[in-house]
Image (tube, one colour):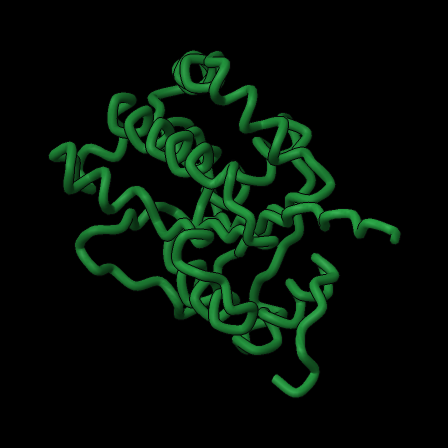
Length: 205
């Protein structure tokens, strides 16, 4: 009797500036694909800010972003033995690098802070996962009228933040797919990611 090969685990990462619909889309994908809570890593930054005493005013702190990055390492490593075939991530370990660049005083400061966060073995290991052909990095671009200030999340310049994402993902050689104002309907966004990842779902759903 022929033994079936185990299907590779697919990882989906939704990244981008604040108020671009990452969490809304993540929740819709989790529901559509019946992803259990143990395979869905929700936004980590808010919990780290609460636990470590950080705030929106300290977003430029290298320590804050290092704490967030390390929390991503912990959550991703905790999923490595999970058997569910799809893993979903609201943001990634790349996001803290974006914010140290965005809040740096100048180009030299940005490069120094970026190198500090990327030099660790943990980041290099996770970077390898991001480049895997079973990982899908989806950059959500700004949509006019969606920016909301809730007093917690960053209210960064969305266009600048998006450009930094594009440049850094290119520099790190991480393939990515973009969604923006050309696709704002939630179901259309879900379908776009299903097509990208080639995940099959029940057609009756």
